[in-house]
Image 1 (cartoon, rainbow, N blue to C red):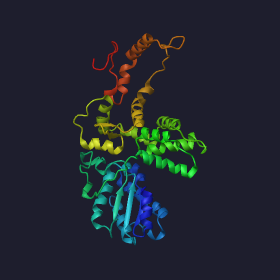
Image 2: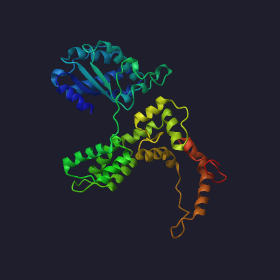
Image 3: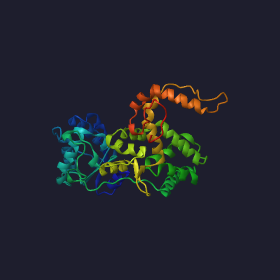
Length: 368
C-alpha cells in the first residue's frame, strides 16, 4: 500500500515520494553511527530503483554519527525539485540507541521543512510510535502519544469485513477463473475476522500449494486445511505473534483472558497496544476477546510448545485390546505421570496462571 501511494504521489508530478526501510540498521541498535551508514546506503539503493533519475538523492553530506540521517534528508530536500515525502518502513526493527537517535533527528529537522527537510515522513510498523521502547533514560516508552510533539496522525489498517474478503478473493477469480464458494468465503472470514494478513495467507496457501489447478473450485474444506497448515508451519507473522506473547505487558493482559479472570488495573495504553497489534478486539457484546479463531488456536499452541517438547514418550496404556478407552487406567496413568513430571513441566510454562497446579495427591477440579 505504501509503495503504491509513494508511486502515485511521484507520478502526480507534485512530490518526490519513496518508501524506504530501516531494517538493515537493526543489527546495530547499540551503534547509531553504524546503523545510519547501513540505512543510508539502503535508502540510496531504493531511491535509485524507484525514482526517476532527476529525483535521485545527491551525495550525502559528511556528518558526525548521530546526525547523518538528518543531514542526508536536508541535502536531499534542498536538491529535490519537488517537496520530499518519505515512508520509512520496518521502524519496529530498530530499538535502543539507534531508534532514539533517528527519532530525535527527525524531530530536530522538522521545523526546517519543506525546503530543508522532507515535507512529510510516515513511520510504518506494528505499533504507534508512543509504544516504541527505548533503553536510555530508564523508561520503556516515550511517554507521549505524540513523540516530540510532531506526530500528526496514526493510521491503522483495519480488518476487512466479509464483503471485502469476498471482493478480494473475487479478484483472483477474475485473474484465473478459479472460484471461491460462498461457504469458503464465509469460513475464511469467520476464522480470520478479516485480519488482512490471515485473509491473504489462507488464500495464498490454497492457490499455490493445495489447489494449484485453477479449474478446481475452492471450498470450505480447503480453507480449513489451509488454516491448519499456517498454524503448523508458523509463518513469519505467527512467529512474530509468538514473540509478542513473551512481552511482559502482553502477558499481563493475555494471561488473565485465557484463564477467564478479570483484567484488573491494567494500563489502558497496554490494552490499546494489544488491540493495535491485532491480538485482541472489543467484542460487541462487551469486553476484550482474542481477535479471531485462528489466534485462539495459535496462542495456546505457542504457549504449550516448550512444555510439549519436554514431554517424554508415553505408550497409551489406557486403551483396551479392542482400542476402547479405559477411564480408570487413564486416570491412573495421569497420576503417575504428574507425580513424576508435574513440577518440571509447570516450571517450563510461560503463563503460569493457565498451567495446571502441580498436585501429587490426586486430581482436583477448578476452585478446590
